[in-house]
Image 1 (cartoon, rainbow, N blue to C red):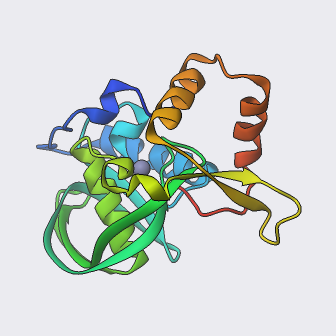
Image 2 (image 1 turned 120 degrees about the vertical axis):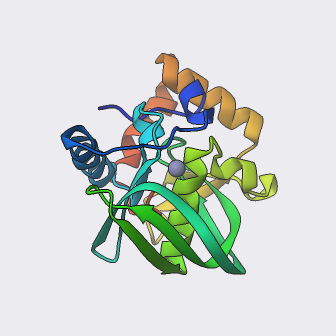
Length: 201
Ligand SMILES: [Zn+2]
């Protein structure tokens, strides 16, 4: 199971709702949890692994959420925060999200469940549900806040931010998808896995 990178058309499709869940749905969620934790990330939507269905996996504060057909039914407050995405590795930007969300979804056994998320959990849930509609954080981020996280031993937290433009990011991910990156970009990507930076979604 591979993570799809920005530029892959599946990431821009509206994912379809599941009418029933079976063993293959649980297997998909198991694999998504694994890919997410290895990345490492805190949230993953099925389209990011090439499956255009409304399924998301989230792990925040050691609690995992395995959600089918999730829908935000209530949102309250607005808050800005830094956000990244496993499909746009090392790119971050400031995105305004609801401070609190109420999400209705189904469990793997197709039982209705309601989740109230506040702060970071609300952000992660909103980000993942956006994926199901083909939306990415760069659509909501103020372009002036976009930046690459680059490893830097001289910095206290081990990385620094470098301003990015959407055009440049699009080009870089296109190269990354096609495996035609220049040397320093490959190093940039490899360094990401161990970086103590913000976690992807
Ligand atoms: Zn994402």
